[in-house]
Image (cartoon, rainbow over all chains, first blue to last red; front, side, top):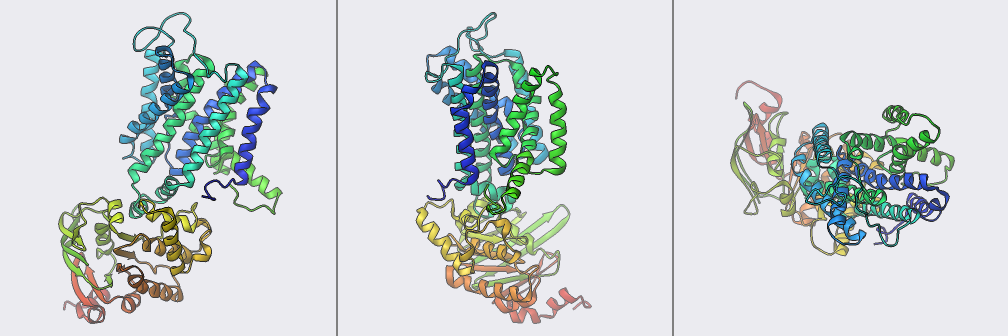
Length: 330
Length: 237
């Protein structure tokens, strides 16, 4: 039990970063940056899911933003159909997306490596078409709930009505997501995943139900993606199908690799590259598409020199600066 | 007791195992044969990674072939691979614990069992070491401990002494001989190292080109002219 709740130095740094994000960041930000950071927080949660699958199981999922769209769609649908509070919508959207992830996992589990990536990419492409065709509910009638003109209001959590409070809320949710992953890593599923990544045959020989644990991992990625989508819906009040294109899923995976899939710092770097970098370019009056060039350079950099991503390089640099610290604190 | 009856395995046109029948009832048994004889294929049939075209396998009277690989592990089957499979990012303790994670016994007794088996293989002092930091021999010892937890019934080693020094190989042999006494499990060892087999196995099965060419007490089997022929290649005998 002691090991279960043991906080590593990296863990303290993460809690510190979350505390900074919750206590200080909102009061430093104007409305532009509040919306940028809120959306970064949502994508951070989604990136945590895709990075987790890659780091723990070596599985490449190219459908994470599609899953966000599913979570967002369900949250909007529930919001406009019923009077549930936001938390209920969030929980139901995340759970339903988790189940969606499981269903997606069933055919995908027979595949590995490139083929698995292709299957998930096809799923993302399918979702893109569905979103583009039917749009996201905005209070209209019928199952798809779409009306022209301005949409109905989206209820935010009662403790987070203002933009500042909502940013705090999103960061707290992202923290919970990371803690959920870390908890799994320290328990039975984490051990099973480590062995599966080493060799599926060895995992089976050790009594690990490989199908169950791979499906479980898909479910967690779905849960986090769905929650991220619902939070994004809460941030904007409505969703646009352009946000959830298959290409964004590919982008998010690539950035998770650039940032470093093995650590929370990597997910943070990835989310910052994805959301903050274009915002900064925007302020400077530079075309935000320049960020794609930077992403490409970052990917080359990561593939050639940094297998643990930018975060891995930064952490290595820090370790070199303080040689007394134990090398393995991650 | 492990009974293998008429097991045949074909890979396309190649017959990897041809109607092999054998009954292992000694505590420690060996399987030897030249490269490509079908030793590892037989072990993969027992583990469930290869489905035979025909035949039956029963362990302690229970049919094993209908069980999925992980269910066989729950039944009590353990195996090590030619290359030890230790997860780099888990500690020695966790690497062993994985094997009994599925069982419903209380966490305290699982911990005690893992600690006991790590002590038996001599890794108790390194239980907290991370897999990536282990030497080849330490990884092998951890692998052995993994095969011993969870009340195993049949433990199989696929070339456990591969790449080891003479000293390490001897130490491993001594350890394998303790398994039956410590856990009650039957042991099956595949190896090229005839000396290792000679010192630790009571009965030995010899395979060549997928066929059983000899079976019986190890010393007799190793003196069999057909076995010598399979290994050294003489004229037809």
